[in-house]
Length: 432
Ligand code: S3P
Image (cartoon, rainbow, N blue to C red):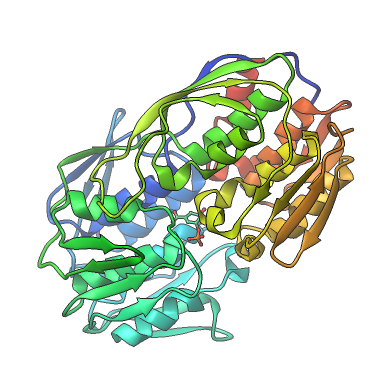
């Protein structure tokens, strides 16, 4: 689908972004692993998170889709059923990397995971390697790509230092640790999103953080609170925040947004660039694992921006929003530099190349580096055309660029937005 985004009048009003994708995936998986029914309010109804529901149904969980909630009746920790067919993860990298953690502990059952063309380019060795150390058998195409097959085994806890800061790999190992004998320790090079830790703590799992080390023990069964609610996704909200900062004269309020500090890196970067984003962002960083997800309204006002440097330790806290940092950089005075973000090359697309080429074609002055990009602010973008390449975040990036541009932007492949934000076009229309 091709969509055109013309230069916009000021954006005004309030908007509720869609439910958090990361938390929805986790609730579906943990609900499937649980012995008691889990009621989920505000589960994200989007392509990625629906792939997760289909996957857990294939594994024997029952999913009841009620108008105001989902009810997931799990199989219990060790009761996943071997499906008759390949599990199709669609475009969902989080599903592809988290699910093997659970499946690795299903003794003597084999599970094959595959997905779309983008998924087939994304490495799984980062989860396969530590899961093998725990005792699982995993065979992947060319040693590291989907499709791949996991044969479950009796797992042992390990002490593992993650080579890259990845919440997906960390979460995969946390799920496997629940089924392993002994304790598992996971060491993160930098903090990354901690939704899995919070949910496990809320379920009474023995889990502790000491500095960069997370230690988790095994459990006989998983007992989550009976009802859990998903806050709005700060990564989806970030597109609206960028629009509010860039479209001259805008003032908008984003309501009930998740503001877990491991997800608000983009807001802190935007504030440093001079962006006015007001909200209750005071959640303390630290060792204590919170049991809940904080939320806040965010009040955004357009205004002038200055360039900034995003350092490697900030990258995991803003990983999915870095394309938007590049967009802000095009409108900012001076240079905006992102370093230590080589992980962007293995997202739904190579987002370093896609951002530099995509925004470059709209009149931006950007240069790719091995681990990020440099943007020289030129006081805006002319406009033109951009292709999402099937990447939901590139589609929405093009849309916001168009609203703030001089001549408008045509986005090819806009339908990719449905992966995380099916109501994106309606929400933008409501603000114009
Ligand atoms: C996610 C973690 C991040 C992020 C992805 C969602 C998650 O990936 O980019 O969109 O839900 O854990 P990595 O852990 O690979 O950095």
